[in-house]
Length: 172
Image (cartoon, rainbow, N blue to C red; front, side):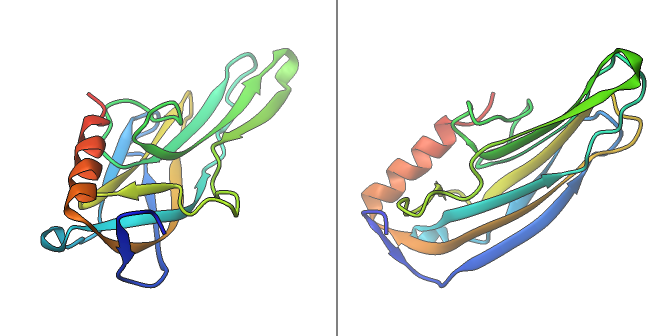
């Protein structure tokens, strides 16, 4: 248990899916955690599982991608693990080669932390965001996510620090 937090629930599993609004269109969706801010409630993320629709090769020499992410704040660009507000990200690329041959490349962040980690992230605001973006696909892509975690109450100083840190990590 992270210092300054006291669990207020058992394990919770949150699952969902976000579909691109149109092919190759940045799309994100807000997920409301319904945290009790008056009691300084936060959500401690213990694991995350992400899947995206496999991109569809169109023609030789053109790469196609599906990129998905889950972040603590809204984003205006595709999220990756280099962004401090991104809890997890996945990218699947079909690398186009001459002659109609494709190589499928899967790049995803650590989705379940090693057993020596207590948690992989803390969401201190009332929501998180899941997003998807395809590149060079004819059809809409999607991301499916499953987040594992629990609710906890934070001390006043820890809660203030967590909220400030989360809001400052927001994508401009």
